Length: 463
Image (cartoon, rainbow, N blue to C red):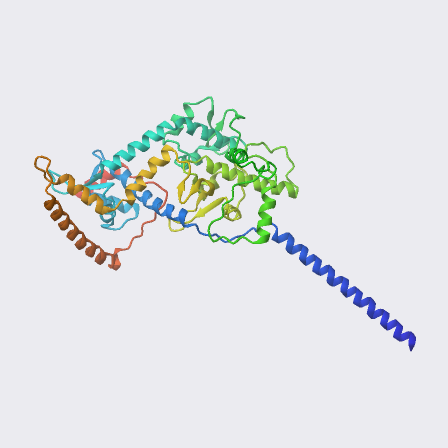
């Protein structure tokens, strides 16, 4: 009996020890797994909105629609168009009947409506301020062609093969400050830098850099690191591979997320301009370096643009040439402190990627002449229509010997205010009309209306 009790006690003690060791090992593994996951940047994150960039894109939406109307009016021989004809041609832009007239009335600083002295019908043309803005943008575009040549050389050097499809560069020409005829004014005029050829396999045209210049193989983030090191005197080892991180307002940063960012900032990587064809990329460390190299490549791509922004769909055109990951949106959402993705401006159909460090309160920190010329159009869009009516009243008011009749001006402005109130009531009634909706889709595709189609429509109207 004593032997049986002793044997049973020994078995129970051994089982309790076994269970205890098993429990400790399970707790240790679970804790180690939690720590390993929490100290790495999560693969999927929710996008946190930044209203400064979203408001920028709302103005950009109006600019794209205004530019389509400008191209439509400037395509005419006399650079003016009757309102009825404009309404018919605007159907091809996706607008409904009478919607074109309502739209141009919202921007009197850009579009002028006047009565033709002979035909006695309403015509539309661009205002003097709009023409000045167009000339200023053209002058700035031509003046920065040497910089555009350098940007195109660096863009080609970002490619692993040193070549890009001509069609992909043509689609993104406005973002990189290239003129419409850049194939002749930039590529063919600089044969010492570029070579244009047709691929035998795909029959597509490609642009190839003639020689990689080591002086250009330096990223903008490297210059920022050098500037920060000289100004702040930070430890060189801490900022050697780091990026400028500014998280959007409302972004939740936990303790372990800070540790993950700290570890990622000190992770070394290969430069986007460096040739990595001879490296072994099968190890886990090499894959991490390639992921950070992709971040540096997109950072450099945005730095080469005029406004430090580009659509996600146009980055995808360079994905294979620059060794970028497939799921670009999820990849960029992992680094919301460096990039911001805005879905405003086109009913969520386009995703615009901003470089956060280049902007402050929705404005570019270091603007260039081409950017300032483009923002002039945004200023004309945001100007109040009431100010345009007051300016017109002061210009057309009759003066005798340069003496202003103050009472007459005040009376005229009072009449104008009363007329504006009646127009406001009429607009409210038209807005309440259920048939006043719009199926307009604000896409990036430009308005391509040929003169032959316009003449055909005129013949149809006369018949």
